[in-house]
Length: 255
Image (cartoon, rainbow, N blue to C red):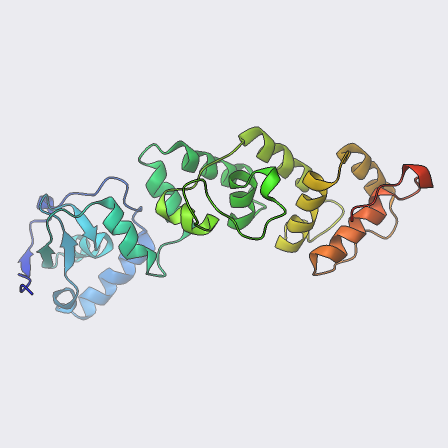
């Protein structure tokens, strides 16, 4: 096992930003600056990692903080490291959030992640997992618990973090999320995971589902949807609403 050579410099210009690495967060940098000023030797114990081109693989926030604090930067060189190594390193750290991964892959012109970011902006009411499943799972997969990508046995979230996330149909996803959003005036929990799961089963699996009819019944239904926590119970509530004041022969069962 070779010994790592730790080097140091105040010439910050020698370092390069790795294309596709996550964005710099000013609050994080400012906290580090404060810590460095309180303990000037702090960076000696956490050197940044760079490749042979001096592209920063790990430690870009420390580098920015060192610049602000005018402190010595400590670093070591590992040849042949690239963006995927940065992502693997950060996949095991809590600091990388879903938008870090999305922006990282989007910066490399990955269209699927550009679409994901656009949908997060277009539908801020919905959390990451809802947007992810709306875009990344085909209607035919909605009755399966295990989510797999077309590149192997990876969960949708794992695929998202490794760059293997794929959008199946933008128009279908948008139409579904618009339909889900229609419940906002009538049900406070419209954007919760359990309701999303219940409604998608109805929307995609109930033969002949008519969303216009659902919304017309919803407007007239006096008591509203009960706030149940389980998917089957919420599906029963949706069935009751769908069939409200409808003759027996025209009623539709969701189970």
